[in-house]
Image 1 (cartoon, rainbow, N blue to C red):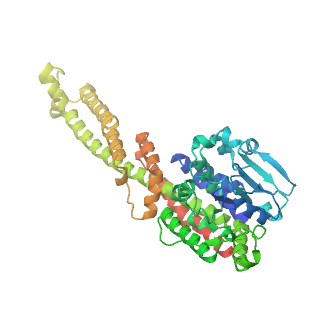
Image 2 (tube, helix red, strand yellow; image 1 turned 180 degrees about the vertical axis):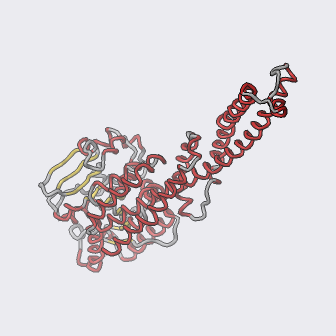
Image 3 (cartoon, rainbow, N blue to C red; image 1 turned 120 degrees about the vertical axis):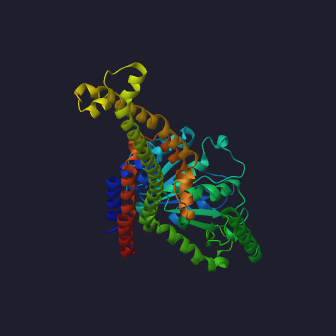
Amino acid sequence: MNEKEIQTEIESRVQKKLSDLFTTYKTDTDSLQAILKWKPVVLMIGNYSSGKSTFINELLGQDLQRTGQAPTDDSFTIITSDGSGEGLIPGSTLVSDEKLPFTYFKDFGEQFISHFRLKKVDVPFLENMAIIDSPGMLDTVTEKDRGYDYMRVLGEFAKLADLVVLMFDPHKAGTIKETYTAIRDTLPESSGEDRIVFVMSRIDECDSVSDLVRSFGTLCWNLSQMTGRKDIPRIFLTFSEAMAANPESYSEWKEERNQLKQKIQSAPEFRINHILQDIDRQVNEIKLIAEAMNAVARKGRAKLGNTAKFGFAVSLFVFFFLGVILKGMTGFPEQTFLAALLGGTVQMHHFFVPACGVAGTLLVTSLLFTKWTFPRLRQKARNSLGNLITLETDYRKNLWSKVENRVNELLKNMRISEIWFEHQTNLGKIVKFLNKDLQEFYERIRKIK
C-alpha cells in the first residue's frame, strides 16, 4: 500500500470514527479536510527583500515571479501544475471550488480574494505539489493598510503547508515586525516546528566573510529572541547564482543551496506525517474536552444520587406521615393511611394522600436538581475550568489553552441527559482511536520509509 492509498484510508477512518465526535465537541476540521483533499504544499514567507521570488524562479527554472529590492508582489500566489499547460486562475474561482482546499478563505473578504491567485506552470515536479509565494512581510503595516488580516491568512496557509520556508536577507535579519509576529505567534499556532525551514539568502551581497558572520550572528540572536529558545535550528545559507556578481567565489555554498532545493522538492514525503500529526493533535484536543465534560458528568451523577437519596428519604416520611400532619391541621382525611395500616383496614382510598405527597416530593426534588443543583454545578465548573482535569505535561497545557473556551461554551449549554455515560463512552472511543488506529497508521508509514 502506497502513501496515497494510506491517505485515502486515513480520511475514510477519520470520517467513520471521529466525525460525530468532532461535531459534538465543536472542533473545526476545515484545515484537516483541506489537507486531505489536495496535494502537498510548500509555503514561502519572508520580508519583502528576502529573495523568495528569486529562489522560486531558480527552483522552477523560469522567470515566473517578479523580483526586486522593493516590494514587487502583494498577492498570495499558488504555483502548481496539473499537466494541462499554463494558465492563471483568480482568487474568486479558487475560493468557490469545492474540490480545492480554499473555500473557507472566502471569509477573509474581497480585498484578500483580489490578492489571491493560482498560476499553472509546465513544471513536472509540481504536478504532485504546490508552492505558495506570499507577499513580503513589512515593518509598519496594519490590517487597514492591507485590507485583510494578513497574519490570519498566513496562519491558515501554514496549516495547509507540509513545509514552511522562512527566508531572511542579511540586511534585515529578522528585525521586521511582521516577521517577529509570524515566528512568535502565528507559526507556533499553525505549524509544527519540524515543518519550518529557516533560510538566509542573498549572502553574496555581504561585503566580506566577516560581514556574513555578523549577519548570521544577528539572525541567530534575533531567532533566539523571537522563538524564546537558545538552541537555534539549522539555517540554510544560499544565494542566487544568476544574481551574484562573482558566483565562483560562493561555490562552497552551492551544495547547501542544492540541499535546500531537494528538501523543498521532497515535501510530498512529509504529507502523511503532516496529516497524522494534525489528526493526533485534534484527537488529543477532543480527548481533553471529553475528559473535562466527563469529570462534570461524574459530579452530576454524584449530585443526582445524593438528591435522589434525599428525595427517597423525604418520600418515605411523607408516605407514612403526611396524612397524620394534614389530619392534625385540617381534620382531613377522616382516617389516615398510617392508622388504617396499624388497624389492618387499608383500602385503596387510603393511598390517595400518601401518593399525592410522594408525587409532590418527587416533583420538588426534580425541580431542585434541574433548577438549582445542576445549574450551580455547571457554573462552578465554568468558574474553575483548570481543576476539571490534570495538566501534568506542557503538551496537555498547550492543548488545554486551545480548547478551554470550547469547554466553557459546552458547559454553558450542557444538558442534564449528558450526566449519564455519553462523555465516558466518547472518551473510550477517542482513547481507542489514539492507541490503536493512529498507531497502526504510524507503523505503516515507518514500514514505507
